Image (cartoon, rainbow, N blue to C red; front, side):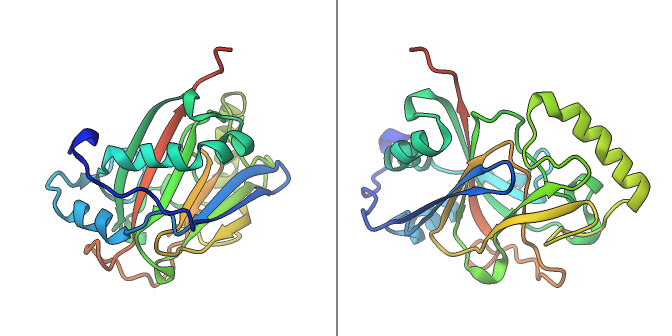
Length: 241
């Protein structure tokens, strides 16, 4: 559905916005409650889609395209605070990719890199959004510090060293199993935000993070009752001024 064809209401003004800085590196985090006026509308749109597929990359589940109007609403409603908190204005976003996402990979089937916190992109001007269409029982999102390196975010300059340090971790501690959900010998949790229906999180793509998937989590393939979210990735450019 093209953005020009979408007839979606304007976002309400009663959203609750909280900004904070995480950990030693003071990485920014934005939490917005009551983001969308009618979350059920986004769910209905998802249920009408037929192009659901196993996610590329390391996401442990299924994905399908979300409506372009979602990304436009993020810029429209949060552009001001985004510039203040992340130093990236709406005009500096060159591309937005938005996906419905449903966790469904059992813990025993995870690849090693899916068992530790990850970064989406090693670029601090690229921003990530998680929007919850599920409630608290499905687990929120946590942010981490890599103990050996001390890194809480991965830049291009840090990436090779971080990968080398992970090799040392695996050699010392063995390869981890299952979803990370708290402190481990390799990582320390520095912040956590519970899931809540109609809650949005925004953070830098370079921040180390992971979904909080409980050990006894019951994998539910129904978007109406499973761990269903929208993930959006905003590509930031340098100012042309």
